[in-house]
Amino acid sequence: MSDRQLAVLVGVQLPGTTDVEHDSDLAELGRLVRTLGMEVVATVTQKRDALAAAGVVGEGKLKELAAVTGGKGVVPSGAPARKSKARDRWADAHADASLAEDGVATDGATKAAVVVVDHEISPSQARNLERATGAEVLDRTGVIVEIFHRHARSREARLQVEIARLRYVAPRMRESSGGSERQRGKGAGESTLELDRRKIRDRIAELTQELLEIDKEQQNRRSLRKEQLRVALVGYTNAGKSSLMRALTGSDVLVADKLFATLDTTVRALYPDTRPRILVSDTVGFIKKLPHDLVASFRSTLDEALEASLLLYVVDASDPTHQAQLDVTHRVLDEIGAAGVPSRLLLNKADRLTDEDRKRLERAHPGARMLSAHVPEDIAHLREEILTFFDSKMVEAELVVPYPKQGLMGSVYESARVISEEYDEVGARLQIRALPEAVARLRSAFAR
Image 1 (tube, one colour):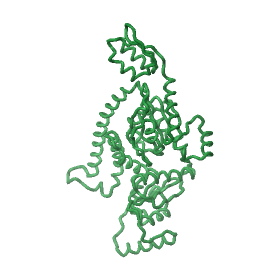
Image 2 (image 1 turned 90 degrees about the vertical axis):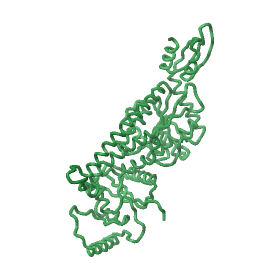
Image 3 (image 1 turned 120 degrees about the vertical axis):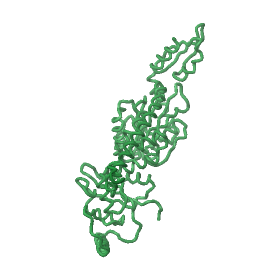
Image 4 (image 1 turned 45 degrees about the horizontal axis):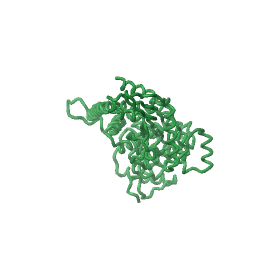
């Protein structure tokens, strides 16, 4: 038996959701749960018009859940029951008999310790599920927040995740058992719960201030790169962005076959080096039902996409739900105002496709580039496409660098491609290709 924590997934298919979409969402939830190191041992699903107000699913499904977790399978009433050992033994025996009649196993097998719901649920629904199943309950938002918490590495990412985590935890504290009854002391006038919630508010304010200071530093760094040519890799989590980043830049960025392996924006130069340099950014991946607080807290990270000259939408073409994933990416980028940035669609992981799949995708996405991050020829073609895009934005101009300012020649090679270089009595006469903004800045610098 695995020593990993065992989990059972709960999915409620609501009106307007197809069977394929529902199955895809549950499969994705399973991958999220496994990313946390748990093992999925069962899945309970139900079609409903809405989530059950008390326990998310109906009474029959609660019993099914309880068979996997070892709980009672019933949401207790608000009134506390009178204690009776005999009554408890009778209830346990009859609950087991009822489950056996329903065809649900009640043997001594290891029970799941965690119930994961593929929806965002209220604190009261989570509490009722915990009481009915005897297991810890997480909703989809809670799982994603926990993954972000574990994977954040940089100071900025840790601050962003901690803010989102505290905002998620705060409203659920009012449902903690006995929380509102515990008092700090007679006459203190503030319950322990109220004190804890105030501490969370203060901590969020403190973290937000720290994040603002870091953001100022980031803005300064971004302003220095303002005239540089910048490409941002964007897309669904685990679509292969980090693999493409490594292939395009020759860098040693983390590549892992798990969700949200990358939370910190990495910026590297395109390799082999170009003149002017082209910077490539690997950004945090997106996912369905990405909690709004995480989108908001990672706004500074996503600004890399907003400020890029070219967005490369990376899609796992081998995933049957790739179109839905692409839609999610478009929605998030539209939310941060990056929908108008020039872009290219990359259908990644093409090495996993059949000939029939390729033809179907070519019809569905004319103009998209089909490639694999592990095929050098594909990367070489993508690199040429990037170079062609930026070259089309450049203009050719003459630049005169007086002899007294020869020490600034390095800035010319950083900002422009030097086509020819000649010297006369004034200084160096350079024929360059660069972005119009860079030409104007260089001319201003050498005119002073």
